[in-house]
Length: 253
Image (cartoon, rainbow, N blue to C red):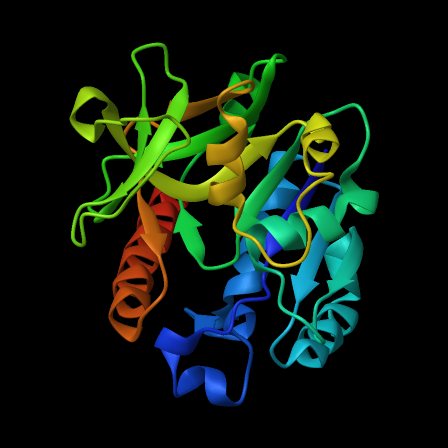
């Protein structure tokens, strides 16, 4: 199984922590966020991972080298000269991800207890992508029709709506909060020929959903933290500490 970790973000909202280190190396209960994601992917069966880098990217390279790539095959997709966003970053990394089997795409700043094996198994062969969703509170929502096909996006705080359908009415669709993890079929790269440079994967999905299946996977009772601020980092640390303590107690019993 292959995966890509989107680790090239600037981490602006985590300043001053990210003045000296990239967001991916911000510590979470004593270990960098990147390590938590790599270990989770490895436990799910991933053996081949590509990581994109930008801000202070050499520190990520050095970290991986110091840890012998955690016993995995790890490739670096270098965006240090030009940040490509999630869509452009995915396209640049296509040479590492192309093949016959779906792969996992995971934001480095997402901490969750989702069962990645179950998520991967839920991806349907005829779907371009399956997106992890939850009941997490967020102003930005993906909008799906009654057949679970992606049709639009809305920022409920600003009122901004995105859809490639004319006269799109968000109130007619089902809202899902995106969890920052995807299962993607490699045929996605066939649809990206006309997309160049920097672009968002969500904008790409919205352009492609008219002729491709892009479905949600509403994970039951999943906990997801989007670690984009010092406050959410503290919340994630408290949750992870409690979870680890419970696991230790269970092992003792």
